[in-house]
Image 1 (cartoon, protein in one colour):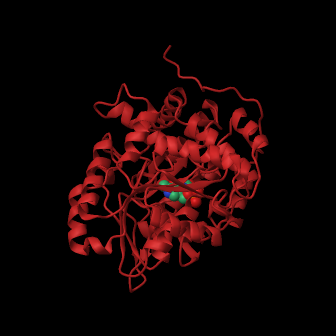
Image 2: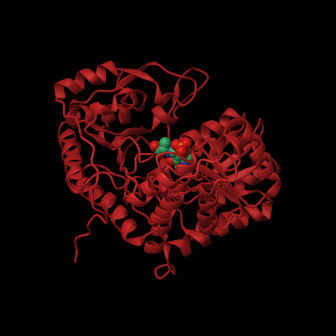
Length: 456
Ligand code: F0G
């Protein structure tokens, strides 16, 4: 059979509340042209994020009921710890309430002025936690990753030559960690190859720099390795994951992505001394070492989700459904990141709206247009999210102006996706009418979450 079907049936549903384009234009204005400020009931298809928005399985819900809420030594923690150890091979597992809590702990301990963290691309909260500590984040994405229209199998790879050069320039002693994000969320959900991971590992070991993986979407990345990298076709996803983590010293993870959980995360590592420091900070900020800001039931749901996410039938459906939307858009001439990423479709807003300069945030203009046209909520990954100002308050734009349509796991059906394609293609047909935006209010960090804008 050629048709790939959703590998699940639906047992429980939630309503979608319909509204009109006129309603949505009013809602957008009230939300200051920032869809983070829109009430979720006013959204028809919510592709803002794939984080915490998954549909949990009946097994996970059963796990929720069985969760043990003991303050210390909960059996649910043991299940969680066992699942993480089996996948990663790291002997130390520290639960946190979500990914950024793991980042906050790690970078508070290792960061500080004069320090540099190197990555393929740091996600927004990861970069923010690094910068908040006084350190600097450096993205060294490979060249092919910087060109949305050009397909390549592993556009999430880090540029190894640039990594070596930067270590020489900054001094290994000033680089507390190299972090590779799999898949590369801010760079189009593109995978990192095993070869690249191996090379990073070898450079880091030579220079005695710890190497961590930001593992939010590890299963999607491993499935891409199975599909695209020589020598992995006959390996199982758990085997590939074992190998991937074997090259690293530790990882951070948001269980809100590839664990189908609505909340949760963890830190895992080999280093006992660093782990002790992390645990000390964990107890102050998150909770005791066997729950770390989570309820026992959350730990149980994560333990189950981590296993479900590596099932190949699921991953085949997951990767194909992103590819399906990418193909539909591409066939209609919409400029999309090629090839399709693991969790989201990324539109190249610079190409989509060439008449809007980066200073007027073409990505955000497109995000607003998609909401107005069809109630589809997406997110800008461009200069609103990553832009900085120079000394004269002139915008230093981001590398790319992307609009991400992140697909929540196991939530929307093919007709929802067909509807999304129709909305995007309709907006594409009248793209010349779209106008840019200017910021009227903004926070000093992570401004995209709360910024207020106005049409120019
Ligand atoms: N690292 C990556 C690669 C992420 O994508 C995220 C979150 C985090 C870390 C932080 O995890 O949300 O649990 O604190 N990404 C979400 C997104 C928010 O929409 O892509 P968190």
